[in-house]
Length: 333
Image: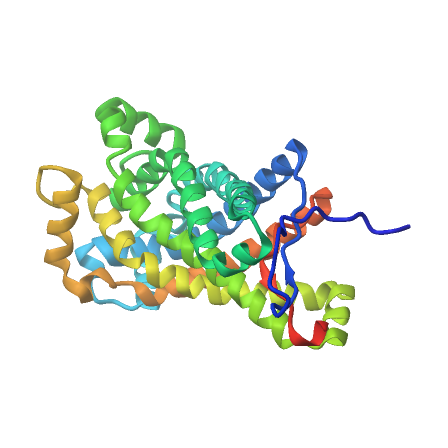
């Protein structure tokens, strides 16, 4: 059976230019639902599974008793002082928050990337501006996803930072809503945007370029082997995700530190921008990157596992692959 012809946005191209490859698939509502569910499940499983690491990281950032300690020491300190169960503090809001955030982010990225390729007008233009397409699609998708995430992230940080604040997700969310209302629930919206948008940019953009680098480095025969081997394909997915995780951690670390401070109630009164600027000045460059080591480990595992699960879940649900924007390698000619 002949393979279905993929619609092209190619209008004109100089004869000297190499062939360009931008397969424009038409996604249905069911496809986007699959993207949402796959993104939601992979995000909630990865973030939920890394809750103990996030607890220690948050304590190192904001608790004076943990100032200057290593991740391993902080891990032992939490267990010795509060028991092993304390390492699961904030699991509820983490799981629910990233279920909706992950779904909106991954499906939104697929949607906006496709729209951006269409708006580029030609395959040549899409290839030339692919970095801008990745950055813009990740940023817009993350913005809308963070509207869903912010109240639940504020609840999680309160549970971790203020021992005894509440017994779990429902009681913590209810108390925060009752005592602070929308203002307190969305007090961290700006710093969350400052954290999550660079995170998404690192996550998606670096992952895209890692895949492109690997693809262009392969011979035609090697690519054929990869297409026929789930193990090789998933290994590339995992490796690209880990590298993207390192980039995401570095780009988002300063805002992550400030977000923890804001939700703890630190900083002066005034506008959010003033509070963030003041806290950043007080922390200094070194202070803004406190806890980066543990967070890089956490984020590499988180992002790598997310892309691995996202790919697997999409495949299991029969969803199509996303749009790819890349030049063909010389071995294709």
